[in-house]
Image (cartoon, rainbow, N blue to C red; front, side):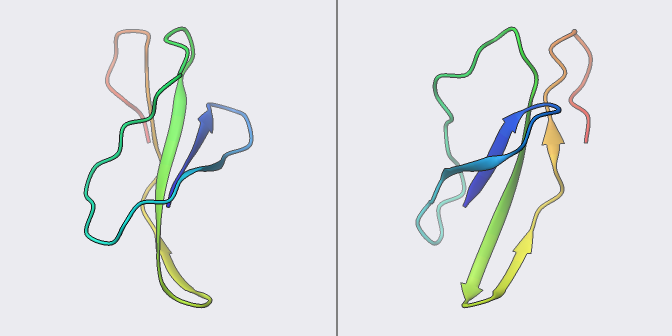
Length: 65
């Protein structure tokens, strides 16, 4: 599952991807705002792991975590 949202705002589920899929394109984002994303992997009911959160830095710098 891809979870994300505008930086500083509550995050929400954006997509559920198929097992083995290693990319996802998020459409409809406003280029004037920063966004944060994380990936949640679930392999059984109640058993899951999350990636480190990554955020955009549209001010010309490198993305922050």
